[in-house]
Length: 210
Image 1 (cartoon, rainbow, N blue to C red):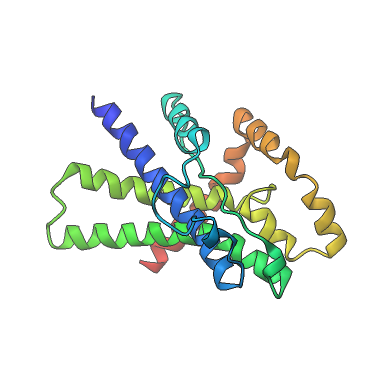
Image 2 (cartoon, rainbow, N blue to C red):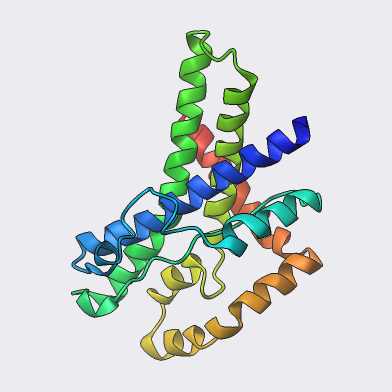
């Protein structure tokens, strides 16, 4: 039963983290002039418009049950229309960065909240301690994963902003195959080689900020 509770907590924390991630994309796009996400009803923390049955629930559950050392997942991508952007490259980079940055902020908030509760000896609930612990871990993993420069992950769109137009165009053409590349890297364990350095970098950055 304890294991089931842990799994439910992990999935709940993950779902909240990916929803915040997508809302951050949509909100920054909205502030940059693109109302698509707002008109689509996606600038909300209500999980119903965001939940993707496979990415939000089934995939993370399978990863947990299979004993993976980390779990990832996602929500339905928030619609963004770059036609509204005044500075295409810069604005796409800002919108793409908003997702991972939101997860880093959630991890920092979780650390601060845990320290606050410990300091005032409020954190007596194992359940609350578990929620905050998973929030720190899952949000750092999500940020690290999404910063990997494989289309369609956010890291690829940030990288494209620094590339010459012709090279960025060729790079973007990989996107239809991106999910298969990610799955291959995940199955073979190569993904961890990419993920861990970014994970530890973000983890140490958060420690420094604390």
